[in-house]
Length: 101
Image (cartoon, rainbow, N blue to C red; front, side, top):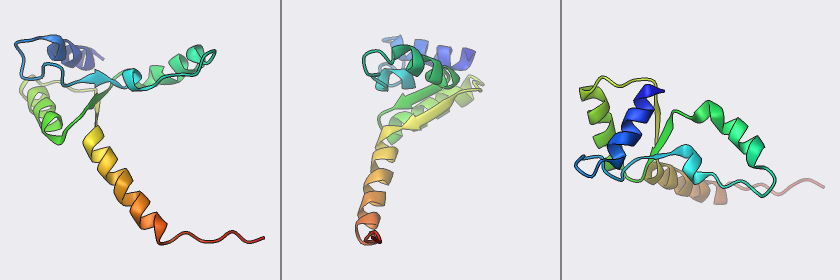
């Protein structure tokens, strides 16, 4: 979307508060050799999905987007996802069931 492109451009601007804070989701996906075309096709639907590292960066991007009336993009925060994954793994450890044979 034009909004995600604008945000990525802003992240490349050394003068911006968003400098080096935003990446495209595709930058985190490394396909296996020979699967590049399939992964590229699957990620096409997520071209507007952007990723930030911290909750502060997330808030900064949202504030910038609101100020500039940017819409039609998705934003993920790695810090939040990692915390949620960690908490989920801890709760699963105590509730694992033995498989029936």
